[in-house]
Length: 351
Ligand code: NAI
Ligand code: MG
Image 1 (cartoon, helix red, strand yellow):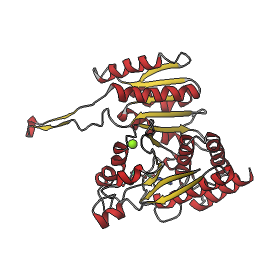
Image 2 (cartoon, helix red, strand yellow):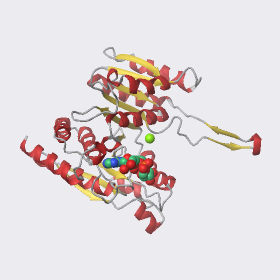
Image 3 (tube, helix red, strand yellow):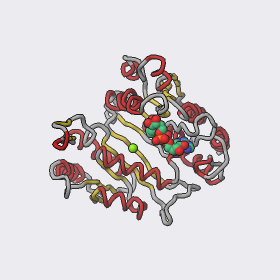
Image 4 (cartoon, protein in one colour):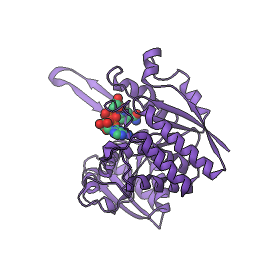
């Protein structure tokens, strides 16, 4: 079997870490023997914008629809292209255009990682974030002017969209430690969050085996720092999930390792796998970017393609490099991007 992957390295360190993750995934496919990857490199991003005046071709979404999945590095060249152009012209366009309505972001204290928390415990959280509606809607506007000016930003929650996110999270929780936490704010937001709570109640009641709880976003932000090991699957709206996943990256010790997936769970269109971090212009071109975020993102793609066992193998290889202290600078090590990948692949081949 051949998986055709639309590969968008993008900008900055995206161009450095994507080829590294490709090497790792190719090595795994070779070990497995049952499938291979075909990587089509699409040179979209800010360089493309500077040449063509757009981040990707007009028929970009149509091109992407022909692939099995999308593997993306990062976009952003803030000195030459404003961030709202690079973000809306590519990332958000793909997420929305291909209905990637679920964002999955693990935060797990891998062996060998040093959390900045004093007592992190052995945390292993997956945040499931609704990725297409909620607080990030186009509805609203500004009216009047001067001291009478008003800005209105509506949040739009549909039953279908909310159910989809919560149902995905419940399925995931029942495959993991059977614990699910819904993040809400029904004391302050009097329409959308009571609605969210109702939908959560309806969906979760179909899963007898799940241990369920709810927490308000403000409290949850504190709990993620005070007692992250008590949580497993956390389901949240677009804005709340955005906030919690940045905390997730922070408590792991570096944003350079945090992985993410934008899923089209119905599999009508390809899903997009991209690490949490951006193009890191401050270290681009130096060969010191941490490739582990992109590589762990590759594990999420393997999982989604149904190769969970290989995904586990990949995660232990990542832990091997960390435990062996083969780390890049962001993790207080001195290894280069390539050295980390080389060590990881060597481990995979002999294990
Ligand atoms: P950033 O994630 O690129 O960098 C933040 C800090 O983390 C920097 O000090 C950077 O050196 C470090 N860092 C990030 N990834 C690393 C890695 N793999 N290894 C070692 N260190 C790493 O975020 P920033 O600086 O806010 O944004 C830079 C550009 O990236 C902007 O144009 C922004 O819009 C874009 N961006 C793109 C994203 C995407 O493509 N999904 C996500 C976030 C930002
Ligand atoms: Mg964010």
